[in-house]
Image 1 (cartoon, rainbow, N blue to C red):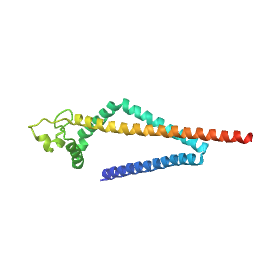
Image 2: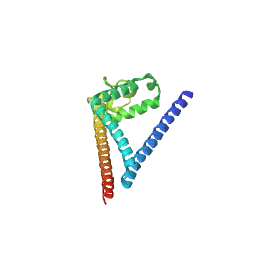
Image 3: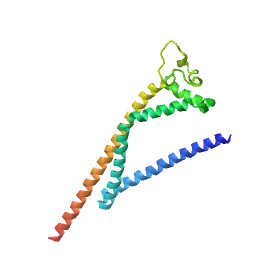
Image 4: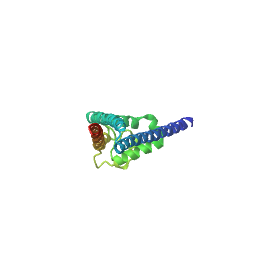
Length: 195
């Protein structure tokens, strides 16, 4: 009983940490957006400079993550599959009927039967009707998961590339606006001296 309560508490704590992390990130993005807005409306070089530094830093981080995703794509897919296979084969999982049901439901959606061997572990795959049908060949879960993960990762990389491009574009526009503001200030000062 105490073990189940601590698992529930840790799960709830992790969920709350994720929610608070997203909220803090949202406030940070709003702050950066307001800096850019204030800098452009007020033509404030200071606000625009801070905006350029923050957006440039975020864009570099996004670009680094994008490059890592592209380079380590196969490694990431293999790691996810291996971890899920270990999770499915874990004896502690196979003792709990709720965990078996969750794993079984996921594998039914994938329409696959076993990792590396058909219908292994039996506690999960023997209850799936599709896996008990001997008249048709059964795809293995690692191949199905590779295909699905590859498709999802391509979508994530595409969205990530778009966000990186938008960040770079915002940075370039802010630099242009800062330069225009700086030139306008110099031009006005130069004209006022010689009138």
